[in-house]
Image 1 (tube, rainbow, N blue to C red):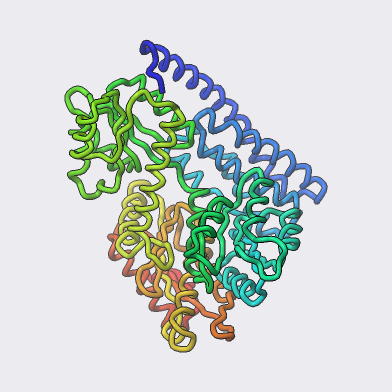
Image 2: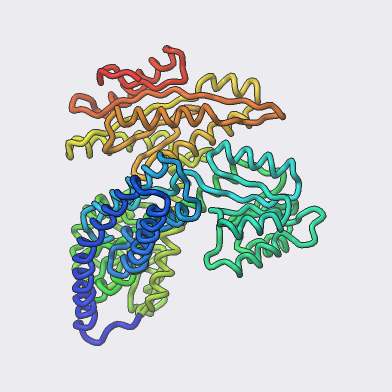
Length: 560
């Protein structure tokens, strides 16, 4: 990006964008309550009126989705885009499931009644995380697999994991379904037995036809064949799996694809003594959907790292009082911040000085001036990689959930937040009933499928602001902020019922499983460990009481 001639140009641009943002904010203060009012009328309307209201809502949401990000309201724009998609699905199907409609209306009303804040605030980010994925919480997966037994087994297993999977034996069948409704992801066999056309050739054609590519996973008998892999990548494959397919591993990749699509904005911290240039970088990165903070005083680095928790740090090399490499070394002195990529942005062109800066502490060196596109691409690629590595280190390999130590830390964090705000939070301990019996009778692979299915069901039914971890073995721990034990009971008991309805297949035999859970609510008398122990005692009571049930800790004077 070319450095502006004089300090006034970026500042004038920023002031102009701020003025436009203020006007847009005033418009939102009128439009969002109107959306909430329209949503409230959906429940009492007949089908014809409901369709008209949905068309109205979809149009307004579409406008917001297209304009909010431009004016700095990126999380709100993402919410609008997701709700617009929900409105379209209701218009296409005109479903009559009142419970699902209630959830959709509640999401619209919450969207319309939220405080107006820019997309750089944590409150807006939290609202974006609360937006629903689908009206019934599940995702649609289309499977193109010529071998009926293989395709049906995959369909059944993915359904057990909480997806809506559909299997097609032929390209014609899949193509007809795609004309009616697009899925959330595709699984395609590279070579279809007896078919006139190749599965990957069809994937290539489909990618050219669609406005936006669908997440694609490819199945093959020749995973080590370079030509097949190259063909798959050119078709847009995000994963390649050899047969027989490890379905839990495939499902884990599906979740990773979805997480990349709907994940939180990347957080970027900028330290540059040229405030105009730092502001310009900030505007460009925010326009690309990232959350950005500018560090004006190097001594404030600790507060920024602790409170903002950046995923990438951009440092100017030549700053007065404290140079970029010095600040980078300060960051690297703390083990908690070792994962954060540090990118130097500097007009320094001396290769020796660049290498010296990188050797001291740093991961990349970008020479100014840098174009807007190059800045976004550099930061995005580093942030994406950092998040993937961070998640891999913090998450359990089988379930993709937080590990034992990380989920325990979330209990501490949410308890502190609840005590500060005066709100209630709930801690939930869940355990699969008679899990040893599952392993003994059906094998450890089947046991892993049961664990993965529960993990996926919990991930889909809980909110994005909730924390979820594998506490150990077949035991899970969930932390639900802004949620009383009574509210948590309703949520967890619904999950219990859904889990009991799942059917698993092992060696041609069908079986089911159940879970028990205990809930404890935050209070001023319990620390984090006591809170977890109370939830664990409630879980023990549920087990002792006959299993397949949910109980609230006795101190809450309520039993499930």
